[in-house]
Length: 347
Ligand code: UDP
Image (tube, rainbow, N blue to C red; front, side):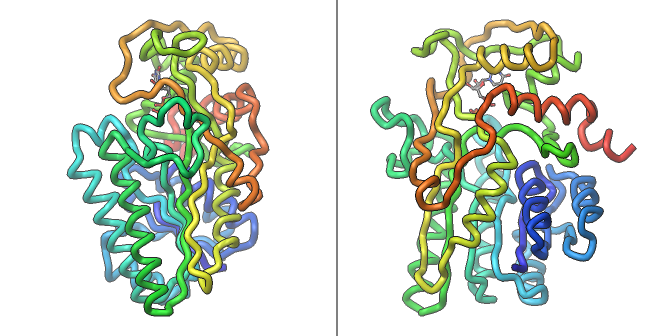
């Protein structure tokens, strides 16, 4: 299939491009390189130069997007390009709505104009907000009440897709979409080729590994008084390569003639606390990983993990890596060999 991947030079987007290339597809990556890495594009091009090209540009550039869709005969779009920091979204909501909502609106309009029939959308469990205790593990039917501009921007993305689906059905123009609601994505390519490189880095596993590398003196634990067994927050960590495979499965599952609308939670269904993650990192790295206790971080729910049954039944999604040590080990493999992130790769 000819696939356009937006945000192709970012963390999840690049791993998804790798999975598409390894499965033999033609991939055009689109990335404005605001937070993506040109080196990720170079690594992907080296993997399959005849089937991959990174185009540097923005999803809000209607002329560029429409010409790519038309000229490259794109059959499906996997849409990752977005800003993705919850905390930043609280401070800069305008920026999140401009990129995540405005940019996506342009992309969808271009897709509709050209007649691209499939869209797999990078959504988030942040669209659920803070679900009530009786709805954990969280099913896809859980009410979506996001508590941050980031979560709201992703929910609006889902709404735009639903509206486009209705309009497409009325116009008898085949279109299908899937909203992929991720839990906590972690780990790096098992062959060591791609990794995680965020500036600033705020996610727990990379932060903990930066302590092991000596780049930070300690890890801050945001809250030790949550109603969980050890008092720290519980999250569902899903490996990035499993997640990438789910996107391929979704792309091929979509039936535009039936105007499919899907939403799938992507997690492992198991929850691990912040302290359990730190203990896993101690085992994997052999480093003491000092920690200090801090007050709760605003907007952090105590427990978030996925009810995975729908993705398993409908998509055949069964994560291959569910062991926390294995997830942390795969991230450590990358961080250990790329202490400066992709800048290490280009040396
Ligand atoms: N966390 C922490 N210290 C850090 C980063 C994160 O204690 O330096 C906690 C955070 O409060 C949350 C969990 O680790 O409970 C996962 O946070 P992360 O930012 O990785 O993902 P989120 O669940 O916010 O998407």
